[in-house]
Amino acid sequence: MSVRLNTNYIKNFVSQHELRNIFPLIKAAHESLINHTGAGNEFLGWMNLPVNYDKEEFLRIKKAAEKIKNNSDILVVIGIGGSYLGARAVIEALRSPLYNLLTKDNPQIYFVGNNISSTHLNEVITLCKDKDISVNVISKSGTTTEPALAFRIFKEILEKKYGVYGAKERIFCTTDANKGKLKELALQNDYEQFVVPDNIGGRFSVLTAVGLLPIAVSGLDICKLMEGATKAHEDFLECNLNNDCYKYSAIRNILYNKGKHVEMLVSYEPSMVMFNEWYKQLFGESEGKDNKGILPTSATFSTDLHSLGQYIQDGSRMIFETVIDIKKPKLDFYIEEDKDNFDGLNFLANQNMSVVNRRALEGTILAHTEGGVPNILLEMPEINESELGYLIFFFEKACAISGYMLGVNPFDQPGVERYKKNMFALLGKPGFEDMRNELIEKLK
Image (cartoon, one colour):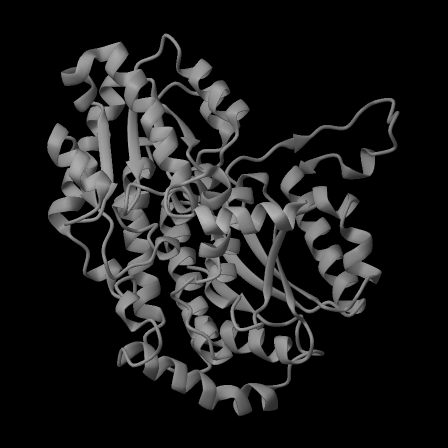
């Protein structure tokens, strides 16, 4: 069994008639994808990646991961956006930070270069002190401010600790195949290199070397991850409303047209927090254009029911929820009866905690749908590499279809560049002098 779409709780919000009426848009989006005729068609390499990936590089990734596991206590992954979110999402979903603290089987993995916080950087450097470390720097250009700055610092740390030759054995570059500053540096220093494919955008790159090397170092089975994605690739080839991926895209767009402009991805497992972050980048960068798009947000229940629950239940009716329903937890806990019943919770005793979590899920779905919040369920039998690979490809293809249905290019991100130009100007980067003066006046 793989991920399954459950639409039982949207029947009062989306009719079969509406699904049939929107099918021509689904078909047009599908044909744009398979015929490579839609906007951004030069970035469709992810579509057949599960069955058409570089097998030689895949073997090199596995070999490099073993090398890192054998000689390092810590792997520092340097990247921002799609260059780190996918890997971190998979690793923490299956190897939570608490799990990593409890086990010493594989290197600890720390992510830097995804912010400009001096505090965070210093904390990671301190954690690396007196430990053997390797670095995986991920950047297509090598000049993106956040990761470039972090790599400058960790390159110096490695060279001081191991010498220039020793450092080169511990630096792994995932970058453009032919060009860019990081590519040049890797060639000059003989760093081992892996490729960021030209035809795959960062937010769609988790199943390339961008995500696979850190994931493999964490001890997860990247073969099974690809097997799950391959099954999803096969399951979502046909254009019809029995295709769960396409049906999910259709439902999202129907709800959007009814004023449901916010999608909240909900899970009941704290280990899924970073997966939620990956989903937000995937859909946010893909759909948020031309004053259009569903705002992707997320929550972890039952935790966030004690902070956001009131708003979801009774606030503005602009939200719909997509719930990742994991049927079997990785670990369970049996609740014993307390002889004094001091907390009044003996009614929960003599069963597994997962049963309590499930009743919370069921009760919440009923409450929210009754309150006017549509709930889409994505049911997973359990959480493992194969199921997660399946879910990743499900969301990637759904995002592409949904974006085309919305009438935007799902594969560019022109709005991201504006803050960068402002930041460069305010920092005094050469070539931005005129813009800097203008911005300083605006800030007064």
